[in-house]
Amino acid sequence: MRNEEMLLIPGPTPVVDSIYDAMASETRGHTDPRFVAIYKNAIEQTKKLFKTDGEVFVVAGSGTIAMEMALINTVAAGEKILVVSQGYFGDRFIKLGQAFGIEVDVLQSEWGNQVTPEEVEVKLAEGNYKAVTITHADTSTGVAANLDALVPIVKKHGALVILDGVCATAAMEEDMSKGYGQPDYKIDVILTGSQKAIGVPPGLAIVAFNQTALAAREQLERVPAYYCDIYNWMPVMNDPSKYFATPPVNLIYAYDEGMRLVHEEGLSKRIVRHTAFGKGVRAALSEYGMKAIADEQVAASTLSCILYPEGVKDAEFRAALGKKGVIVAGSLAHLAGKAFRIGHMGNTTEEMLEKAIELIGATLNEIGHTVDTAKAVERFKEDVRAVV
Ligand SMILES: *Cc1c(COP(=O)(O)O)cnc(C)c1O
Image 1 (cartoon, rainbow, N blue to C red):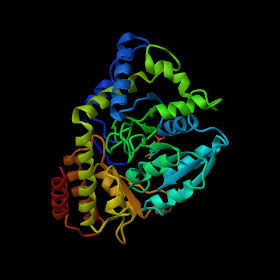
Image 2 (tube, rainbow, N blue to C red):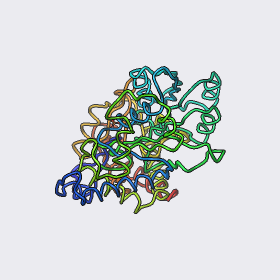
Image 3 (cartoon, protein in one colour):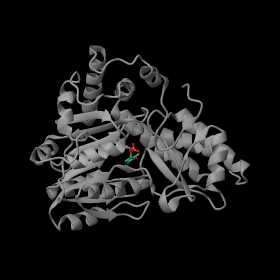
């Protein structure tokens, strides 16, 4: 890998050479058959990833555009949604919905915990919810949603499941053909971005709609958007030689290569790998007296939010670690200064994480918090081996 630093923040994540190489290919016209073939392949690989019977949309934009596309193509102004929020990114759907005149109810967990299925059940029994938004892995807390418990409840109440997969897609199970409890209890919409567990540079919004979600779009009189109206993109997705708005040609090259790598490894292997990384990183850091805010049963496999031990200062720690070439992120909202976030997803490798654990230990020792680096590295290797 030609990267000089290990980008272990929860997105963007490390990009591998073959993706950089693809991205540096010659920029061609968006209707050039050579580009069109690549765009078509990227769309097909995305359909295969989600196993959807509907449509996928791969367009320029960040994950937030994908959230917007998912919501406003299924829910009209005045209709009601329930936001199941396990952190900062779950909360993002509140303002997003309100910006479009959607009535928003919210269930928020304490940071580090999950919203319980019982709470969702009680809320949905109030009736009239068009959709429920669920964040698969909340990037602020490292808490994963329990889809096996939540999807059947939402579907039983006749609402759409909108899943934010920005920090989960291609690393955690997101199978739109899967029936949760009942054959027809399925995830209706999944949205994601290119730069997290997929491991491609930022800039692409990716959204998948199943037939139920497409039927919801059909019933909307109007969508309060132009760029984000999926009906403007549908002809392009079915025939990428058509024009609606210029696609980010070089990013599509990169994404096509990223998708190729995802399918080459295989989703089931990726899920296991990420499970191993999550467990391994958290176990190793616990040897340093660093505890994840999420308990292991609810922890996401893609990133962790780690509390500092007494006396370790956030800015000092991250700056010293950064000098050693390991970049981690600070925490958001009330956890700012008290915890850091480490991504362990996408193209990140076992060797990189092993090195990162070692350098985190070295940094702690340097700033006067004595730890046993070798023991933590050993613990990482053991815990990874126990899973894969
Ligand atoms: C990063 C993230 C987003 C926002 O994506 P942007 O690309 O920054 O717009 C939304 N949801 C989750 C879960 C995320 O991790």
